[in-house]
Image (cartoon, rainbow, N blue to C red; front, side):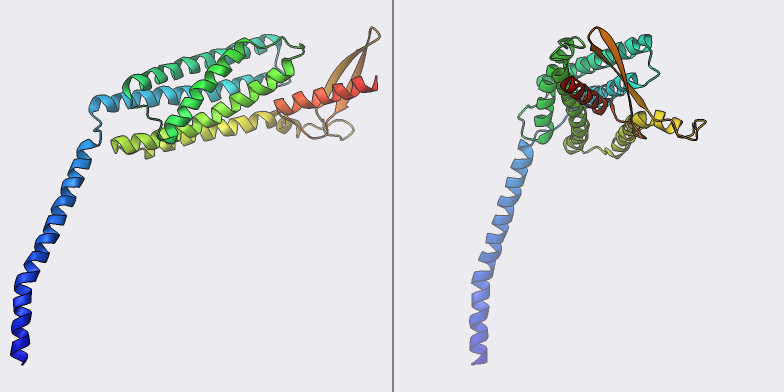
Length: 277
């Protein structure tokens, strides 16, 4: 009886197993052929395309990753108390020059991307880049259409100019990182060194940005008056009333605000004074 079942199993294995192995081999062959066909349809990045990607990255790094933050740091230097009229003009024109150069380099990068790349906008880098291109041109024309100081729309213009410029700068820094990641995916080249360099540069600019508001305050911490009182910043406000000038001194004890905070605080004080009169 045992020999009978063994013979049946042998016959079953002889006829079934080869067919099963043949099916597995066919499925493996089909899977490999599909993978080969998929790889053939993946766009290969040649040396010329890699060069275009690198030039695009350098242009946008210099534009939104360096010149634009440098322009913001430059104009913030004009908020110091020691800033004279001549120095103010120099800083203003330097700020404008840096921003114009930033727009020129960004335009060159945009032209290169339109000419050489597949603009499918199926990734975050391309979507953020498109929004940045639109925003920088809006900011560029806003800079040339600023109202005169003291005019009615100057406050609104100043707020939106500051808000849009800060947003563009932050989004440009983020998109530089996404661009490095996209470069690594397309070319398989390492980006660790470039990421470290860019991070070190942005960190230095960020520390300098924060240090600008506190430098005068830090210097005054070691200055003591004769009555053992520490010098505190003062704001002078001149209000015209019945053809007479009234000088009001407001002392801010131990606080150094930034340019935007000072702008709004002064306007609030003026509004209160006008309401009282």
